[in-house]
Image (tube, rainbow, N blue to C red; front, side, top):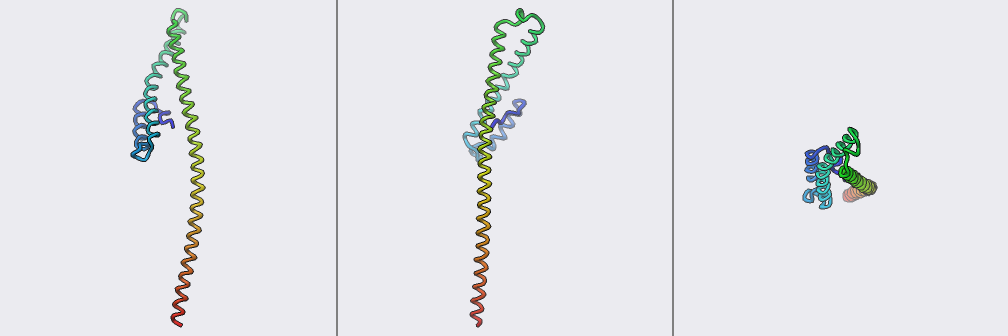
Length: 156
C-alpha cells in the first residue's frame, strides 16, 4: 500500500502516519511487516518531499535562464549534468511509484480472491446453520410428541 501518495506536506504525512500506526502496530493487531512498510514509506516520503522541490526549482531556473539568453553562455556543462541527474532522479521516483502500484494491484487482487472465498464460506456456514436449526426443530418437535404420548399412556 502507498499510504502517502496523496500527501501535500510533511504535516499531512505525519498525521496519516500516526493514524495508520495506531491500526497497523503489532500491539494493536497489525503485523511487523505492515508497520515496517508504513515506516519505510514515511521515511521515503520525507526524503522525496525535501528533494523534489529543490530539483524542480533548479530545472525551472535553468529553463528560464535558457529562454532569457543564449544557451551556450548561460547554461554551462555543470548545469546540464545537474539537469540530467534530476531527470534520472525523477525517473527513479516514477519507477518506484509504478512498482508500488503494481505491488498494490497484486495485493488487491489477492484480497479480492480472499473476500470471494470468505463469502463462499459464509454462505456454506449459513446453509449448515439453517440445516442444523431445522434438524433441531425436528428433534424438539419429536421430543414434545414423545412427552405427550408418555403422559397419555400414564393416564390410560
